[in-house]
Length: 574
Image (cartoon, rainbow, N blue to C red; front, side, top):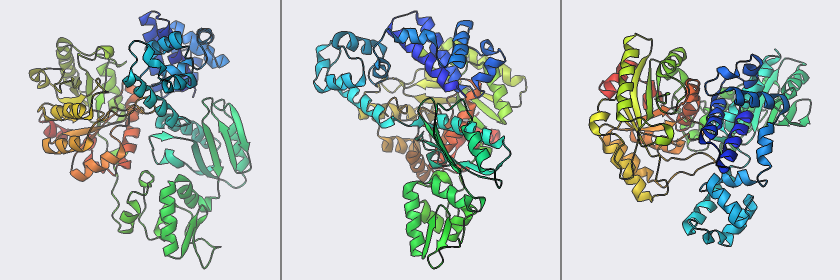
């Protein structure tokens, strides 16, 4: 799928138009189109081939033509012309946390800063302070932002890696040659970011070359790095490496365990094996006294069992106590997709979502959910078309009408209410009382002190109308670090007040992080997975929230989304 490539180009257009102070509606149109394409689950190539681009909400004729141009030529001439007006590397400067189009333009005009190298030098020499509005605090923020960019370089978000892997496995399955196939590495462990996409498969006898050819036969690769009899590597247009390994089916389990990792988990496993006078590698578990015939190799379960361990799910393989738990036979029964009954954080067209509440309800029903909670932004978040009290009351009435029509899914009316700078919420209590569900989230004041931000979160959790604290650390992976917040104090308050914390499943957030999920579980705090979907098709982001939950050792009983409708109604006192 070229969805992300096209989306990235459209977003570049919006950013460059913003620098030029172009028409704000035009800028917004490209930005929204980029977001919409990024969230599509259907390949944009297929939609274009069926001449249905303009049927996608938010895609007009002008943008559709640019999408078609990219699909045909691999570039958009309009973007090429825009780029000629700016120094090479200028977009990267704009992406630094603490900057943006306006500040980046000012740096370009005043200090001739056109790339990250120029920016680093200027910060080191404290040159930025010569510009009005750029002080020591701004410089420190920019230093942090550059560090964030450098740390995330060469890694991609989990959903992007999943899309690449899905494309590869789809092509390979279509050959009819595959016996077993799985992604490996950090993707299989559902890490929040992924370096390379690793695919492992076994095939029918003599079909190795067929699998290799199917893997490399793709317009989604810009360069083939290696083509062997049982291994191949290639680069995506974004520079992401994808690897395929074809292994004997008899040793598939051992190879899958080995290449899934993590490194720390595998080292601990080898240490355990040594104590048992065994060795373990990608070909199997062997007794030291007989290094030729494996004790176990065909399945991962057999590999772990041979070492005296119960099966350890991939998400837990980080050497954080999972081996000790498996030795005792005390592994958690992790929450699964089939346990999920609903989604508690979805935005409709009332605020900044693209779909109506009815369309969201239809998508939830097709997903098999019993309930869905629509939580549009509150009035202070104007950039997201936050709802005034009057519009919120209108939304409440619409939800009542939808439910009265007797759909197969129950729609609950909620809000994602801003936590204001003093810790109060964006709507008065008498309005919040009318809602079924209230998520309280911080969307401003990210540079406040740890004490200030923690006090805001704690005050919100103590509001009797609040059900859940949204994306508790505020991070955007690769774009913005978490704000300073004392999570120990937040967890303590959530426990005292009987409130939930959110696992925001939006791929750029995946917030709460797994380590805090596990801590919350240990404290008896319920976690709620919210996709933060801004389109009905983004309900599929639930898989990434589930990945975080599983990495946090959560079981079905720890997750709000597993509550059947009747239990949900009792929990929320509806």
